[in-house]
Length: 89
Image (tube, rainbow, N blue to C red):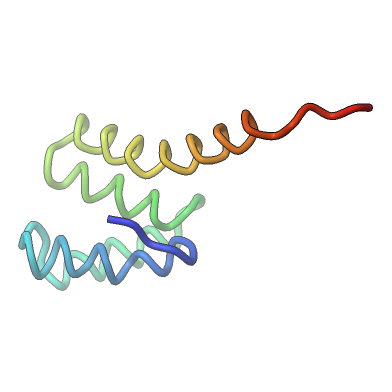
């Protein structure tokens, strides 16, 4: 699953996947977790993914979900940094 535009843009994708397709969460649970994720510090996509991971598979699920959301952007930035030509300062 790939979403562009920040954390709020991926919320609809997550809802479709976890409420409608997988049926891991009810509509009420998802709405509640989005409200909680929006009120807690940190990126909303990360907070929502962590909660869904915890709800589905406990602590291990939340850890895996957190790394799954955090790792791809880190890898992209790392690759861009490695591909930059050296500075001649």
